[in-house]
Image (cartoon, rainbow, N blue to C red; front, top):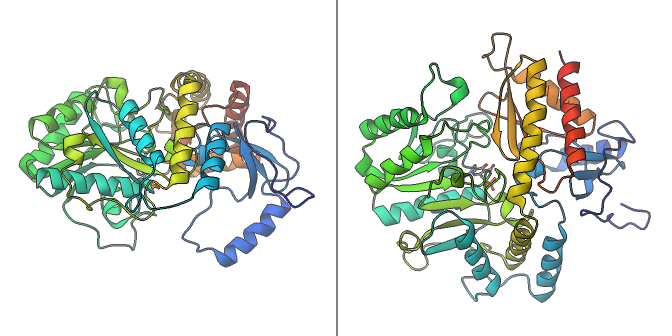
Length: 452
Ligand SMILES: Cc1ncc(COP(=O)(O)O)c(C=O)c1O
């Protein structure tokens, strides 16, 4: 808070600098964290216990006056920057007009405008429709409902290392037990898992098409193509470790689903909205899904998610079968229209490619110095390093955690991920100034030196 008791202003006007005035976390954050510990369930975790009071561009300003470099974007959400002017202006205007009617009761333009933008930017040149929801998990659940209604089949195929959310159905679809599923079963049935293409961890090198055929063979023999309503896949794995499948994997899967009338659902919740250097990660290989799920980057930090896809599949559901009280809330829709305007105006796919080139160069330089970096991978501004032991393969989550902790103590917000917890992932806001990103990556390099 400022001396007048107001929150300090955020947005791109904040000085774009790393500035530490206390240890991390500082005394005010520690005090606030003690209160949080008393009042907030421990199941809700905290990566870095600094309390944020303002943010913008590529920095977070904490309660002690520290300015931290943000390499996480609130888990791939504020791609347009925190408190982006295009978002806040529309949010204020909408909030002053009305905050809720429930679209299912009395509609409004913002919802339809977001559906129009989704139809324009998602892959595929055909008539599309959308349903708007509140969270990524809800979007994935709805995609499955739509695919089941369309096909009259029940089975759902997902992949090793997948992350699709924390609701009951999406827990079943998510691969990793701890912390996402442990002690929460029983899970929804009719969910089947196939092997993913994970180039760094293949026992022998295989092509993308071969990896797809390996998955197809298992699904065909163990589930039966005729029983599958949908295949749900992240075109680049998010929580599972930023794994980019080998070229040809997604196109071959798409080909097979088309042959068998299986709905191909691309979960672009983490990879979508310019993050990978295209509007959607599927665009890279020209893969056109039947349905796309989106959330995170769509609305500059407001809770909004969507299922978008072929009009005839979306309309397989009876009237009243989709929706929810808050889905497509007018303020969240206004935020999305502002965020999409910013992506178009500032050509954020191009920015993601530029930041991606910069990251790839710096991360490869770190890998050259440190054999514990087994793999540098990703696309655009969705980049990661997989940390391994001296044998070049065994996952080393302890070292990855130590590197991340060093970054936090030195004013850089980093996140880890991966089935083995050994992947350091980097997701800067796409509006981050390049010199700030370079400085942040310099701290990452120092972290590897310091934790030798
Ligand atoms: C690929 C993917 N799908 C689904 C989800 C779930 O989204 P939410 O946390 O908004 O429910 C996430 C969240 O990380 C995700 O990365």
